[in-house]
Length: 260
Image (cartoon, rainbow, N blue to C red):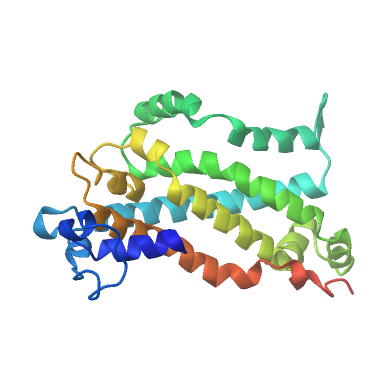
């Protein structure tokens, strides 16, 4: 909690409060001010953080949703069915997905830049969504394969004995019992997508700006620590909210008694 408390107290300080030494108690050790928060909305020559915030919400939630949908379907296929193309098997396909996260981001920067430039999607939200799907899909597949491997196959078999096709068994029986895994994968996708700075910085210029880039833009020759602290708290707030909301889904206890 120490970094959050430090950022909270700093966000209500002025330049004199910052340079006057470490102080933590408002009104007792320093006079609180709303200047740091007001500057995030364009007051006093500050920046407008609303548009980067909205852009980040659109890009991150869209990319996470697409990644979860495609990743869940791919993971179920890799968990329940056997594939073979020469020497390539299921384990090789799973490792291929994981290997996409091993690759350094700098290696992908130029190919992504040229691809979006060719598609006319450079400096656009749609272009970033496509890039983020490519980055988040391996996370979704990796998590969901492990989760489906721990879901008893008897659930699928019982559903098909009751007359369901494999696709109906997936959507009507397996998917509802896999909600905890989907929530966990979605949370990780949101975290990685929301916190990404490198691709948001290299693939956007003026039309689109995500929140991490807007926060870093506050850093200059004279850093406004009050505004920087306020923006840091605002940027982390959605992730904290998501963590509190989905915390009850993080247990696999929902599968208890699923087999009849």
